[in-house]
Length: 364
Ligand SMILES: *Cc1c(COP(=O)(O)O)cnc(C)c1O
Image (cartoon, rainbow, N blue to C red; front, side, top):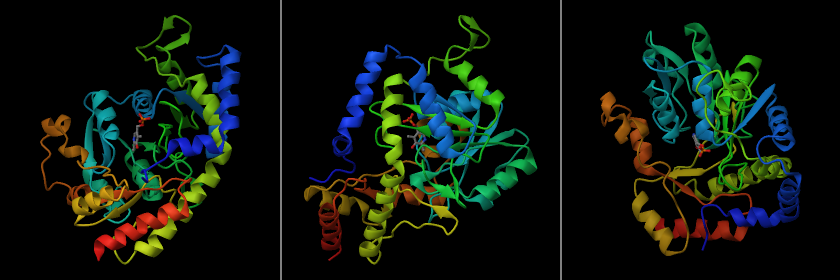
């Protein structure tokens, strides 16, 4: 049985450090915020080369708090890619704003920067590029458009932690970068966790207030906020894992390259643009015979999963905006044809060979 991702393999590879982090948190008596959270926020900010990190309960909350901190709400429009995890669209809607979709580049699956300008109206407030699957979005054109039209940029970097655009870490370009430490992400907690990062001290302060009921001073709410703090336990675990992130991402890249060498003639393989460093959160291939191939692999004990079968503009909550099939053809075709093969740093070469052999057997 080869799973899509094996979380226990990673735990066992660094069990001693994780167990120590957990036990020392239990002994510390600090469970909500406190020194472990502050230390982790500083470590992430320094890894990304930004000034501030604010630890939150999830990546979804990171997007919500980023939108709230930038005063985006009812009547506003936010430009997002037409192919992404639904949270990118759902969070825009949850603050009362309208998602405006832009089709994706069919090869890199990132927002098609040549189609952003035509989506801008007088109500547009922000662009949310998503570094989907671990490949960076094309940031320079996005930043240029944002500055020309006075728009904010929020990076959804849930899948791109460690990725680079022209040698600089994704998540560090926008007004705010959003991270998820959901267990399967490249840096994963043992539960839900997320973070926002920024270079703007006022935005950092506002998001710190929003994560604790809008308090600047305890019990004195200045606005309606949330309970959305990263657990100290998760922060301590992630702190122990962070030193391994670069080597894990490197491992992902090596395995991805190996897949691509052996499967390039049988499937459509992922690309890496010359300006980007891909961290392969997911190894995404495509085939017009996806369902049959998936069933064939399953029967051989190999997991292959679809991310994502439905583009967000066709999801039920977006129906009220009048989007319809055919609006974003590249996103819609990707939803029909793409799927992920098993890829995680602990995947062994012999396991990978089994996957490769199975895919090749299907094609023959
Ligand atoms: C995982 C993910 C999120 C949400 O993160 P959670 O921590 O699961 O709330 C948002 N956007 C994208 C692209 C994601 O992959």
